[in-house]
Length: 396
Ligand code: RM4
Ligand code: MN
Ligand code: MN
Image 1 (cartoon, rainbow, N blue to C red):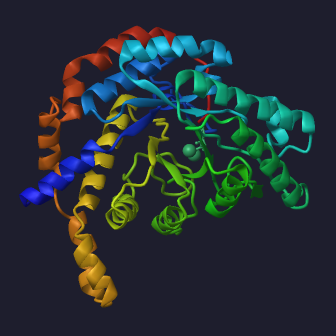
Image 2: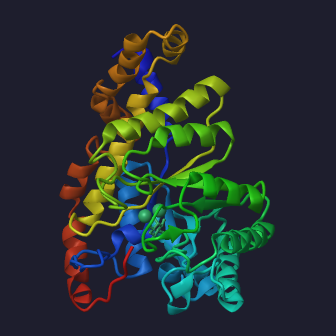
Image 3: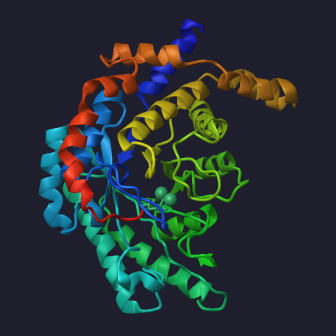
């Protein structure tokens, strides 16, 4: 590795911030069951504590994504407590995630519900989330909609598009000047015939209709099997419409597996598009990187540390692609050379430089080892075991 490459990696890592999801520390599961973990977070205090610990070990996760119904059940009234916890544990609140999918009222949808009373209820909740975000000084409001239907003919696609457009415009109108609305898409589940915001095109058009501060959120697990996610990312970059990511990996559907555990090359290719864009424009795209994983089997803290380190490794590898050379090879259609230029960076072992980077930031060179030696897991297992024994869990 040359000195120039090492410097590239250091610079890339300095700029990579990864937001952790509060719900990733809590007990969650599948629709078949939940395996309760004795160390899982139960309260918001626990979640901030765990996120703070991951940040202390990795130095890369200054913010926590909050799910309003789970973390601020009393809405804006709970903002004060969140501020205190942020102060106490050294991690700030990040994106604010409304929940318009869990309550009984939303059986037939939220903003796409044929009943105007339910649509209004969902809108009011999202508007409250905007208010929470303002109070907590958070930039992004990041709704995901479970809306859809299970059987052909039972709903009007187009009426529902109109309802979504109308409501998202109202949400947009409530945003502060620096705030953003991130529109997430997902092809199916829980709806199995149609989902109202099923792909990036629908999310893009709804974001456009909402207003200039609305962008698309790409959850890496929310695609069909063979979809070319990096091409979607390239299109969104081209149109200035990418707002952020939810990181996770998948093998079959929205599996919420650890980032890069199934296909690390795909994550590398996504980062490559982002680095290439920055190289071309001389300025990085303003993208929020967030984790959206809930581990039913793995230890939650360990899974988060593993995820953050994986993201750093793949981001660093992608920073090593020789953009000048690749552009020339693409221009001359030198296929094998171009492919090898990209692939070569993927195979460079960046881990020694990552260790350097950590040391230069006063961190332990191996966050997982540091975590294992810290005694934190033993302490929270002791403290939470009993509370977890009787816990009621949510699906995420
Ligand atoms: C969805 C989606 C959302 C997350 C919920 C809990 O599948 O990924 O981002 O908020 O799960
Ligand atoms: Mn997501
Ligand atoms: Mn998901």
